[in-house]
Length: 462
Image (cartoon, one colour):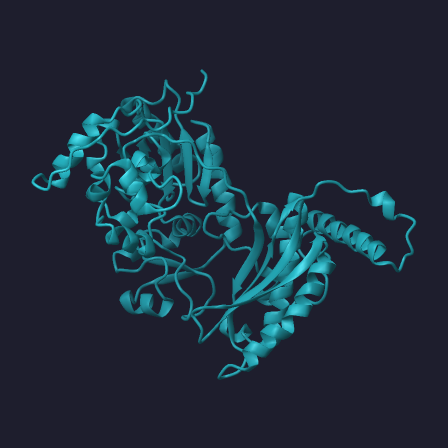
């Protein structure tokens, strides 16, 4: 069965009579009934895995099941929980809670280190299970996927049955600790909101006849893209809740939002399935939170080199070149962070990237030594920016150059970098390295799962 065509563009707005003597709800009803919105069938299924990292650990470690658990990046009270089981959440412990505070709230708390490679393995298995029931339209994060429903799948009863089959398939074939909350709605934004309405192990369907009034109990900050700054901007325009936003005309709501296509949110909240805006990755990078004993100058430099090499390997694997290297970090006594950058000749060569890092390092060293208490860096990161696809290579043009020329050296170095990639992919991580490794955690950096980006399994061998 063919997939439905894109929805029609937003209709023209009819004039709406204002009255200060009617409530915002009544005013909204009048405007809503006068707008000729397109059909809004159930079109999206959004699945959100509940407390994902902690649930994977409970699946892998049966002794953790039914007990309060947090997942932490390092074994230190100065770090924060990156996941909390629902048993831990009953004590007020959530993602971002400092470990020392979590221990105070729950003396029986169990802490387990993060194992990002296992989370990616479980993620891949879960996505494969979902594909057995319905195509996955978009992987939104390590624990969220969105699926587009066809005409024979989008009736309320059929969509509910599909969601229940997916949830049961994950429990039966991946693990019974892996519960999920599913939202079904006319567009992806509403399906995501619906998945958050009932946790854990929920299933919520938002049909067109329930919109937008079913959303009025939510907060503006529950909508992706509305943070503290946007909330203040909307408040200055007199919009303090979702009902107030929906009570405006689309153009007025867009003006309050600001920017181009500011009225998109109004139509999305009313169930219109608007085309997605294309996005393009412009950076490749990694950051690493340093253990307290590794926050000095020497271990930090080894970690930064490892991050740079990993980013360079990803750059080559994806077929990109980079034009800028950014070195950034956060000192123990600094919340705003520190950064510096250096321009690169368009490259994907590990040696050129390491040379640029070496050129930037004295700036970080000087900044750290000037701080009270000396060099104590809590987090370090390396980002390759200004990336673009490799448009073509003519390596044979350099074959007869003077071996000591810059182009010949760059050609040899790039070939050597690629050879190292192939050896590490075949024989395992760090089979060949550039420079020394510190051992311990320093040679395991750069594998964390960032928000909105899931490492490929190949990255765990780079």
